[in-house]
Every structure is written in structure tokens, then in C-alpha cells.
Image (tube, rainbow, N blue to C red; front, side):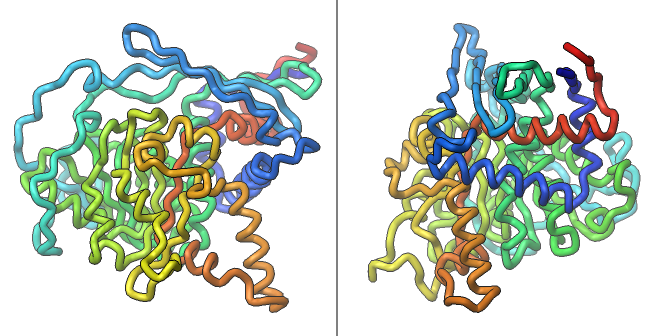
Length: 446
């Protein structure tokens, strides 16, 4: 049995060359595995009863080690990763000196203050687009940390009979598979003109990149909200200087704006970025909400339907969104229905990758005191959505029009803490791709 070894650069090279059709095919494969996970059918290898809960070991120095075993239809394996504790959670750091920072726009051609940012300019953050006031909101301490929390580790893949199949660096793959699942519902959204992302690491990069690949001509504006201007600028540069795709559609017309806590009017601009967004990607290991709940729970905040993913927090103590946002999302209206004509529709549930894992580990869900009936797994929803769309397409029935309206136009929240099955399925697909393209090292008769 051959053993394939893929370094982090091998994995990244494979992923950067993916086109839209490749992404959709990988999402289909992952979606089918997640559906099998949710059905509980033990005739399939992906069944949830075959997936052990991950083990987390925390050392005295704050570092965490995660052991995530999993079984799919054609692979058995484990991901082992370590995460360095954010320096802000070890000691309270001093607040940064408040100075006015610029925002970045890709629409201008004056000289850049960032080395290598050719063709981009630095312009003052706009304060005339809206009169919305965000008050004096201060970002959570995790946004002040300068220490990387990117997981480092390895994914091992074996055949169902135990023969070694592959070893993959887990860093890039973890970010990619998380974003791949988080954007499965994005292609069907009615409007995706403005994106707002919290964070500027690998997770933020892959959420934005997949969104741009899936909806290239429709995304016009991207807001990057991060603790440091330099990291946000590098994220923008990496999206605009793609050596594998050349001058793609998004590179020509998408406007990028950055926002950091050092802006004088951070709270007001933050509210503006959240309110105007059609999709919000939360990708930080935050221990407290990234913005006040009122930005979305107020009468004005509920007028617009948004697709929101929060994938950065993964323990009961962590929370990227205020639990009040989750509480409102699952609460029925006064008339007992989940939809109201004055506001964007909501489904009465939070979408999760794993009900069991999120009930035990997702801080927002635990702090909001949600119950299992308030959650629906992505795998279950994918197949319901397909059946609804097919019924409407064939004209064989009315379909669940409320469900369709919610998924396409409503306020949809997806919460993920990550499950090893995702690594097995996506990792297995990448190994096949690598062997076909001659990427990595393959040892015959290992």
C-alpha cells in the first residue's frame, strides 16, 4: 500500500489551484459525509456513533493539544494539533495607544505605505457613509493579542483495514475544511454583495477566498476587522495577488476596507461594517463578543437578512457572538411563528456541524442555554434543502417555502467547533488529487 506525504506547502499548492467547480465537488463530498453523520445509519462509515469525541489536554503553560479520531467510508485516522495560548489570556496587556490608522482601498493607485502592496493605497477611513453610532465599544482582549493561535499538527489516514495511507500537515487543511463546510450554504444566498470578516489569519483567508470563488461577480466590498493593521493588509494582499488565477474578477472590482481598534471611531465604524454586511465570518479565538448584540438584535439590525458563521471559538469559555444573538435567533415571534414580515425571516434554529460537540464545547450555545431542539446539524439540513429545491424545480409540490426563504434571504447562523470527520473526508479527497497531479511524496509498498 503506498503512503503519500503532503507538506503544508503541498497542501496549500493544491488548494490554491482549485476552481469553482472543484470547490463545489469537494463541498458535495463533504456534505454527503455530514449527512451520513447526521442520519445515524450504522451501515455507513461516517455515522456519528463511529466518531469518538475529541480529547483536549491543557498544559500548565496554557498550550492545548487536541486529539481528534475519526472514521469515514474509506479512511480511518486522527488529527493531532497543538494550539499556543493567546498571550492576552495569560496576562492582561496594556491597551494600545489610540492613534488614527488608515483603511485600505484597492480602488486607488497612489503609493502604498506597506512594502510590496503595489497598486494599493492608504486612505483615511470614511466617516461620512453613515451616521450610525456604535458608542464606545472596545474589542475583546483576544483581539489585542499578537501571538498566533493557528493550530499546528498532523493528520494521519489509514485504510479501513488499517494500512497506512497518508500523512498530511494539518495547518492549511484545517482552515480550508472549516471554511469549506461554512460556505456550503453560501451559493444559494440571494444577496452577497458585502462581506465582513473578523480576523486575518488562515481561517479568514479561506472563508473569503471560497466566497470569492463561489460568488465572484457579486461580491463588491469586503471589510476586514482585525487587531492589527499589518495583518489585515497582508490578508488583502494575498487575496489580490493570486499567482494561480491571474487578474480574476474579484481582483478587478472588489473594494477592501480594514478596521482596527486603533481607529478613533472604532465603535461607530464597527457597527457600520456589521449592519451593512450580507455575510459575516467570525474567525477569531475570542473569549468575549466581537461586537454588541444590539447591532443585530435591535429593530434596525433585524431588517436585513445575513449569513453568519462563527468558527473561531471552540470551548465553553469562548464566545465570538453575544449569546443574546443566538437566543433571539431561536425564539418564536409573539404570534408563535418564526417569520415576521417586518424583519428578515429566521429559522428558529442554529445550524451546527455536530449537535453533540456544540452542546459540549460551543461557548455561544452553552452561554445562551440553548437545548438540542434549538440546533440542526448541517448534514441534516443539506439533504432537506436538496429535497425542497428539487420539489420546487420539478413542480411536484410546494416545497418548504418557509425553509427556502430562510436559507436564501433570512438570518442564518452557522456554528462550528470542528469534527475529525471533516479532516478525514477532505484529507482523503486531497490525497487522491495529489496522487493524480504528482504532488507530494509517495512511498510505494510502505
